[in-house]
Length: 507
Ligand SMILES: *[C@@H]1O[C@H](CO)[C@@H](O)[C@H](O)[C@H]1NC(C)=O
Ligand SMILES: *[C@@H]1O[C@H](CO)[C@@H](O)[C@H](O)[C@H]1NC(C)=O
Ligand SMILES: *[C@@H]1O[C@H](CO)[C@@H](O)[C@H](O)[C@H]1NC(C)=O
Image (cartoon, rainbow, N blue to C red; front, side, top):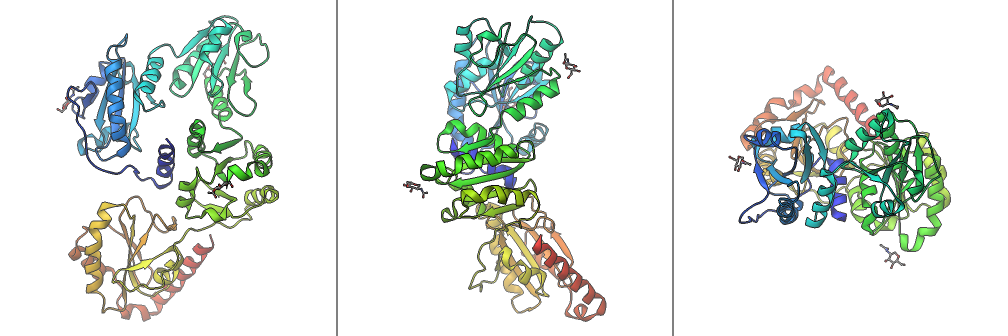
């Protein structure tokens, strides 16, 4: 569960598929329909309700889902009405277009297609067979359930989840229609009910005019809203379902909110402490600060260092730096205050909001020994090795887990060896998962990505074949000859680019 949440988060930050590990298991008679580009539309158009899993054969989470999904398909095939579960290999070249059309960004992604595919929703339910069955049964029924008594409310509403109720004097009129449209739209995210009397609902004041009442397990516990424009209600729900402080502990019940926190558009403040010892010292102060920034573009999370260790690793930080406050901006920039005391939180966040805090840039340490043919670059040495070295540099951005990078490694090494005697050429590599890459200079969308920077500062992305011959030819073609370097014109370019690089360093 936890790794799932964190998988999504990392995916968001890195735009990289996280799932790994091979192998496959085949069932005998599959209840899950297999679709591909040739029959997807045809099959979908025939169904009023069909569930489609977009998977990749190499994705570990997909593999653990497969038997549960199959079991659910088998149970649901005898539901009344039957519910059809299907899957499509979104990694297969011929199905990629469909994956793009459905905006698949990670695996597995499950979509609920209604009305012959005209309405599409994301599946947000559990990933075990019983959970899938329960969630999907609710999805085929009406989007909102009528609450006719206190008992009805008791069986529908539990204290740990969000529930949205529409209170109406009668089940007609524009407000009711808008509410129904809203419930239809958001039904895969929240449970909805409607009632003629607010007195059946366990929380909140009595109301007589049409009211949207949201029950939640945190903060105010109940909030009302009386503007029945669909967009306004949606915005209200979006805002009211984010806790003032999202708690990230080992208890999985909060993980929906953790996902929501990371998926939100605000700047993200994350305080990591040892919750078992320091909960009290930080909680109320942090919550007060968070409350004072409500609606001002910063969301707040309080994370246990144990639960959030993956996050710390991701940021290249250590447990010893806790209590640690990190703010991550939408553009990826990070601001850091290690070993913070409760009393410093308010003023630091204020400084941040006023633009007075400098961003933190993650870098591996500069290696003491760097004598392999392909040199190791880190963010902290980019200036010296790449921007300021006066050399022609081929720089590879890689990820340790990336297969294409591993294939490229010996080729790059051969290239580096062939240039070893040439003092003007440098071949280097940078682990882009352990170093922050200056985004305004390098556009890294996948691994490996190679850039070439000529001695005079011409920056090119390499898009040729990953062969020794092509890479070598590219370097020879684009390098500056030693003679170029002394011409007055190129001198100017050089000093300009140096200036540019040092400005970058401050940003
Ligand atoms: C869709 O086409 C693929 C490839 O021909 C086939 O394996 C699959 O069974 C088809 N699915 C359905 C539901 O017809
Ligand atoms: C119902 O929703 C539509 C579209 O958002 C809006 O124009 C209309 O004013 C709403 N009706 C009421 C009574 O709020
Ligand atoms: C958090 O505090 C508890 C209690 O003192 C301790 O046992 C645990 O090791 C601490 N966790 C970390 C990651 O330091």
